[in-house]
Image 1 (cartoon, protein in one colour):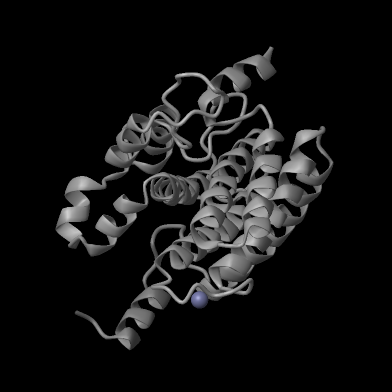
Image 2 (cartoon, protein in one colour):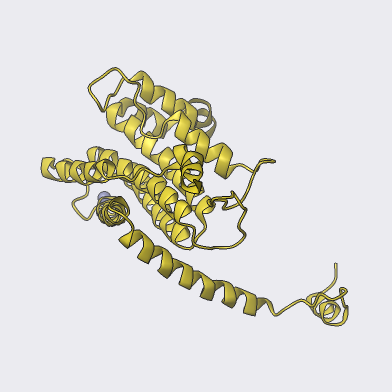
Length: 276
Ligand SMILES: [Zn+2]
């Protein structure tokens, strides 16, 4: 190993052909300054594009408020173990970061976080409908949870409960297999087909945070969906007051009923349609 001083001297003196290494701090500052511009442009676009995007981001802000209140016991403390409150708080932190990332033009990274929020949303859905599974889950060892409560198993458990959002027999799950798979294989996991940030007409990979409207709308949808589910079931689990439970339900439903039409499941279809 060479010392820091030796390394600095080596970098300074050694020429790598025509390449000269820059001052790292300058590069960091340049990235931050570029990010601020992208974030401003993205926010302006979302707040003014069509009917759904402005409503979705407005509703998202209200969801963040509600989750902040219930995860910090501001509406009253049940004096329990706070496991549910911490799950909601974890989801909220990820949600705020996911929003910042999508505004910065890092859509893949925003979607990775939203996939994690979806795992929390599904867990809360399961626990709200089956409180005994919540007690079991809390008492399990890490090994037991990995064995019985993997994200795919949580989805199976929810589907087996025959919850329906349309009064029919559909096997309902907030973040279902198709959505989780699309967020996993296409986005989260590195594969030979990985094309970073390719939310554009030619599926061109993009390195760095640049505004792409298809990416912004898709990532916004994939964040707003699990976030609303966290509000819905988080409210049911943590709130005893009927009015506050109703408030959480209303805020979540308003969000879910106003989501846009561009999402991870029809991403390619949308790109092909817009190319024509
Ligand atoms: Zn409390």
